[in-house]
Amino acid sequence: MKIGVIGGGAWGTALAQVAARGGEAVLLWAREPEVVESVNVRHQNDLFLSGVPLSPSIRATGELGQLADMEALLVVAPAQHVRAVLSEADIGAVPLVLCAKGIEAGTKLLVGEVAHQVAPHAPLAVLSGPTFAHEVAAGKPTAVTLACEDEGLRTRLSERLAGPAFRTYGSSDVVGAEIGGAVKNVLAIACGVVEGAGLGLNARAALIARGFAEMTRFGMARGAQAETLTGLSGLGDLVLTCSSTNSRNFSLGLGLGQGRSAAELMADRRTVAEGAFTAPVLRDAARDAGVDMPVTEAVNALLEGAPVAQVIEALLSRPLREEKA
Ligand SMILES: NC(=O)C1=CN([C@@H]2O[C@H](COP(=O)(O)OP(=O)(O)OC[C@H]3O[C@@H](n4cnc5c(N)ncnc54)[C@H](O)[C@@H]3O)[C@@H](O)[C@H]2O)C=CC1
Ligand SMILES: O=C(CO)COP(=O)(O)O
Image (cartoon, rainbow, N blue to C red; front, side, top):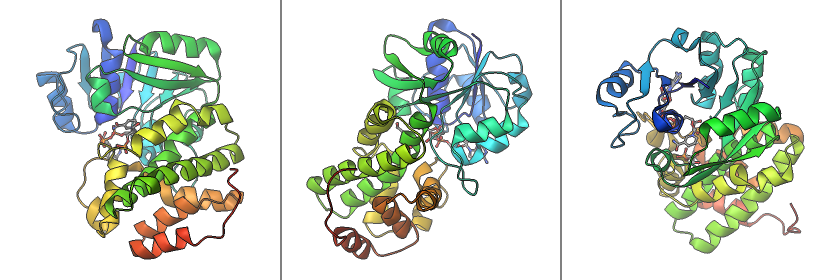
């Protein structure tokens, strides 16, 4: 199966490395000419994944048209840009494996729903889970959810992408796999705030558990299966991203917790903290669906500039309630 990758950021590059195992040819589309040059000439991605030697069988291109004869495309542009990039490419009926984590601003659509609008004939799969790009590219053990309604395609994709240190777990729950990844980014910002404001490890654990209850409420309202949310793409990724400054979302929250403004923290950054874009649209989608998401509301307040102490006070003074989700 000839694999193309759309998006030459850290994750697209790491996934190209996964797909290139054993010397398989992989074509990587990158927006930045310097990434194309760096991958083709030095077999590295100096801009987004520095220090990782890449397989020479990865070839980069700046032309989407060159992806025309691929048999599957991994879509790894940031969520807010997937519509534009897919609209420019000629997708036809080529299977798309969606790897971005987010919800589209304005439309409130999941990435899979966006892809279906732009490329209605393309079969869709979602690859998501606890996956820091550097670790995957370095061949460290990683496990992901690979969700696709078509069992045959799911098996073919799994066989093509899985390897000794990259385990895929199949699922038919495409929506559930997407929701975990999108929501955890917002919750990771909250965990970073807890760290930055010095609120302690008890508070962080409580936030992960109550955040997971939020993810579950929202997921169930959108038709996700509970077992997907407790799996790699939900709870698994939530735990990873809420535990480490390697996460861009956690790091953004850390800065907010230290009293810095979102505008200052987001200025001039080349890498993407998806949670900052997902937070307002997730809040709006949750309100539309009548789903209570207090942590998501708090993250939005902080991104909009509310003082940390005030937001924490508001969260802690909510009426006491039963624990069930
Ligand atoms: N980095 C990671 O460890 C992981 C990232 N992801 C997800 O993968 C997606 C891509 O993230 P990364 O590869 O980490 O990105 P990155 O932060 O390494 O790089 C930014 C990416 O955004 C692209 N970009 C910026 N402006 C754009 C525009 N106007 N149109 C199209 N593309 C544009 C850049 O070309 C570049 O590929 C995100 O949804 C992220 O949540 C998922 C799992 C792991
Ligand atoms: O999605 C990720 C790990 O699974 C990467 O997290 P960040 O985008 O917060 O760095």
